[in-house]
Length: 130
Image (cartoon, one colour):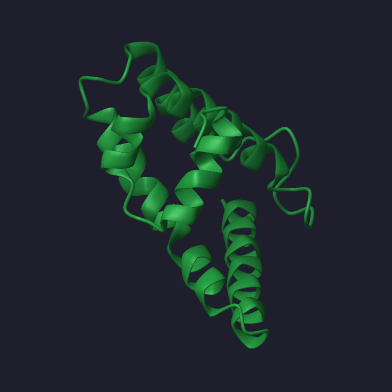
């Protein structure tokens, strides 16, 4: 449990530092989007899980991704700087790509609450034309 708290603290610190650096270097809109990315993704996933238009297989994979990210067991221990959270980030990206590509552009757009530029990036990563 202690290592999980340390990992969360390190991850939160890196996130806050990245937001602060973006802000200091004049990238205020990028800092704002990074600050709201996690809440926007949570709202997106919540909306997709409750949407009947999303295929069951995509919902199951989304739940697996949530459990994976919340699990204290990792391929690479979280306390290792930089690469520690890497397995979670890769898993999250793969799950997001699959769920977005299977759900469709219209459904994802309906549930997205963040910046439109970030949504275009998500679609590009998922292989959906913009």
